[in-house]
Structure formats: C-alpha cells, structure tokens
Length: 317
Image: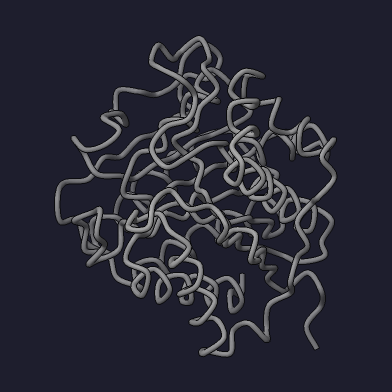
C-alpha cells in the first residue's frame, strides 16, 4: 500500500467555473469542464487525493497582500464574481502548498482559474500599467511561493514555467531575490513581449532568473532540450537548493492550442514533468505543486493535464 506521501493531491471545484469574461472568451469554464471529464473518464480521479482549498479570508488576504498592492486587491475583490473566484484560486494554491509541505501528499495539481502568472506586484523593476494583465488577476504561483516561505519556513523555491507566454508577473515578483529561482521556456516575440535571455536577475538576484525563448513551432525536442541542457546544468552549478518546486503549468504550449503555435505533445509534457520531479526528488523529497495557467483548446488541454497528473502519480525517484 502506498504511503500518504506518495500520493498526488488535486485542487478542483465548481467555484473555479464561475468566473466568465465573456461567452466566447478562450479563458472560459469549458477548460475546467474538459479537465474534469478527462480525469473521470481515465479513472485518474479515483487515484487522486482531493484537497480542500484554504477558505480563511485572513490567511488568503495576508498571502495576497504579500505580493500585490492594496489598491489592486480592492479592485479585484470588488468585482462581483471574479473577485471571489480569484481569491478561491489563491486559496487552492495555498492548500496545495500546505498539503505538500506537511507530507499529506507528495505532489499536487491545482485545476484552478483564473490563471495568474502575468499578474505582478508593481515592484521597482516594473514600469508599466496596473497589476492585472492578460487573463490574470492575482499571481497564484508567486503568492503560493511567498506563502511557503512565510508560513512554512521554506528558504528557497524553484519556479518552473512552461506556458507558451512568458510569466512576466512572476519574473517581476522575484527579480532581485536570490531565494527564488525562476525558469521559463516560452515563445519569442509574442505576448507579453518579455522573456529576453538577457534578463538574468538584478542585485542579489543576479543569476537566479533564466529565460529560454523558443522559436515558432517549437516541438518536444526543442523544449525538452532547453530544460535538460540549460535548466538542469545551471542548477547543478549553483548552491541553490530549493525546499519546494512550483510549476506554472501552461498547456497553451501544446500542439493545436488556439492561442499558441508550439507543437509540444502530451508525451513532451510528461518528460517535462519527470524533469521537474527529478529536481524535486533530488532537492526536497519530491515536494512539488503544479498550478494550471494557460491552455485554450479544452480537449487538448484535458488530454495534456491527464498525462501530467498521471506522471505525477506514477513518478518513482
């Protein structure tokens, strides 16, 4: 019989379907409906440990305030439906961190929305408009990372982002902080126009930000090579030893996505998951939390998520 720490947790729920931008918008509840169906049809749902999102507003508010300004927080919370759903997405991310750090589960996937990696904190390194950007309101992964430090004492955190679009908000959140290492593969010269390989961090954080932009129509070999030949050797040369690994799991880098032109297959995502789990196993006893970001072809998204979850479940160090 498996120990509790070998299991995979899942954060999901109807609350995450209540946010609707417009009836035809690509970031829609249809994304989660497709994921739910696929996890049920494949039987994966029966092997997953359901996690209950943190609901304590005091805890959520403090976590969000650690990464966003009060004017921005109020502007989101005041949105009649979007505000509560965005807070619930944060609560889901926090519950996954709680469960993984406590050892209740070894790793977790958060099927939450709205996504978050473009939302930023208006820090000193940012000179653009307000903090919400793209389809994002609160930066779920950045908030979860800071929460892991403040609540659980995690000293160093590795953040990996395979979304088609660069996670500019996450980069800005930690650009001068050497307790976070941010790695991103993404499309070059597309929204949001960031992600240059010249962006390597600043001050004490110099060398802790690694961007690997990929050319149009990048495939499995291209993205896997970036992870195997750039991410892994870079970490091997550093003294950086993460206590937790977080993934911005954006499946708009999958083939046939409506908002991307990469050709990454489900097998490609399995290999990226294995690399991430290898790093987690080596550094932090397998502790890993994956959060949904992009992915706008619902059926393709569901297929990729199912294989990602299966890889998390079946991983053996």
